[in-house]
Structure formats: structure tokens, C-alpha cells
Image (cartoon, rainbow, N blue to C red; front, side, top):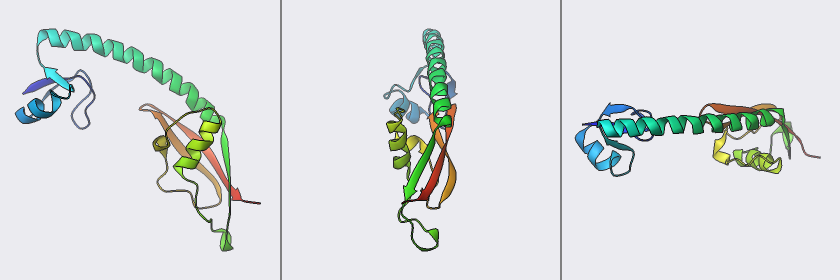
Length: 148
């Protein structure tokens, strides 16, 4: 079965692509959820029109997020934490802490957009990536210091 994708579908294709899928996958998953539509000339024309509007909207969003990324790049988060013997932290600096810091600075983001492989548990300066848009990410400097 051939279908035209109306949305980006992971491991299948991007919006507007004509893809060949299994009959059941198309009929039972893609079509009912509005992720795809049957291939026809009218549908191809409609998808082309939607794709242009989507690209314009995406370009505008990307420019807005680029400005936010530049603002985040100028910030530095100083996180004082209690430490024990041998400079071992009690607790850690998490994605939630970073999201709260950015919110206080006027940048409203979800903590899931902060990419930490694991919470920061060492003193010193760390570079943290914040993914704002599929094509835009920013780096935030985080300095973990001794409290008091």
C-alpha cells in the first residue's frame, strides 16, 4: 500500500513523502490517526500546499528559537551545593534545576529539553546542551560550587 505522510513519522519518513507500507499498518495505524492519506493527484496537490505552509512556519519558529539559543549561550548557572569529604556532593544538579534557573531568567522550557546523560555530581564547570528545536540547540555553562 502506498500512502502520503501528513506528519513526520519516526523510522518511516517526513511530511509529504510517498512511502510504501504494509496494508495493515497503513489501514489500522496511519490512516485512522491522520498521519497519512491515500495516494491521489488531489491529495498530492493538497500535501504540497500544506508542506509549503509548514516550511514557512518552521523557518519562523527556527529563527525565534535561534534568538533564544543565543540568549541562553550568554547565561551562566552557578549552582552552590553542599559537599562532604573529598569534595563529594550531597545530591546533584538535575535537568529540573537547570530548567528552573532558565525559567527565572525568562526562558520558559521543559526540563525534558535539557540533555544530561546523568545528573551532575562533581564540582567545577560543565557544559549542558538544551535542545530547543529539531535544528536548534544551545549550550549553557553550569558552575557547581561549594555552598557557604
